[in-house]
Every structure is written in structure tokens, then in C-alpha cells.
Length: 198
Image (cartoon, rainbow, N blue to C red; front, side):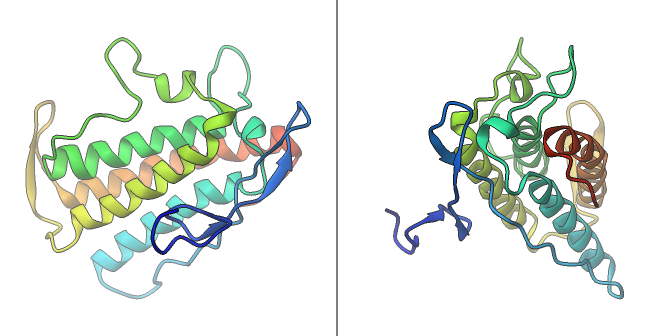
């Protein structure tokens, strides 16, 4: 056990582990409940951008709360490979790509995406890895926060594909990325157990 880790909690999150019964009758991990914090209604641009991004991040996991690994891996409709767990994995890759690889220029490998398998985050989901995939995403959140800490929104980096880009654009893009997939998550969750709500 890592120092500071509380028994019964998901490593790195403080979330409780929850037992659940999978389709094979084996006790499996259950996605924890999530509390979302409203973005500031009055404040500066940076506070607003960070607040909206944090809300969107939490919303993805809020849509997953209470589901087993098997349920999280359920796909939408053929031929789509979209699943809630796939969205969790996809966003871990996207967080790493924009904040660390592109903005900070860190030489870190991609998590799931690879040449010849650009959709591996969706295509290679495994119910048995759900807890690890959630921990991976929340770890990338923290690393993304650190990558952006102390940087100005107008700070520029160079993309091989798009040229000059700013940290401000990254925040806006990430908010859009989560919001776009929140609609997918709404439909996936309703299909799994009928739960609706924003």
C-alpha cells in the first residue's frame, strides 16, 4: 500500500472501493460516486476556464458512478465501439496529449493511441481494468493541472500540425472535448440502466 493511501480507497483519488456483482457472479469493482463543484459564476478568465473544465471532468465520472466494470464496458450500438469506459480511457489520452505532450513538450508516451490503432482506447476496453483506467484518468488530471500551473493563458507552444497555439486554446478545446462526449455518456448511461439527468 502506498504511503497515505487509506485502506478501501481507490489509489490516488480518496474514492471508496465498492463491491458489486458482475455477470459471472464474481464481486467486481464499482465506479465511485462523484461530487461536482460548480464553476465560479463571477471571476476572472482563468478561474472560469479551470472551473468549467473541472466540472466537465467530474461530469464524465458522475455519469459512470455506481456501474460495474462490465457495465462500463458496454458498447452503444454496432458498429460503434463507444462505451463509458472507452470515454474514460480516451480522455486520459487527450489530457496527456494536450497538457503534457504538446503544451509542456514532455517526452511521455501515449497511453492507448498508437500507430495503426488510433481508436485503441475504445476498441480494447476490459471490464477487469476499469479501476486502473479510472485511476489513470484521475492521475492525468493532476499531472495536467501541474503542467498548466503558473503558465499564462497566452503562453505559446508550437504544434507540428497546427502551428502556434496557446494554453487558452487548450482549455477551451478540453472543455469542448468533454462537453461533446458528455452527450454520448448520457445516452450510454440511459441504455445501461435507464439513468438520466445532467
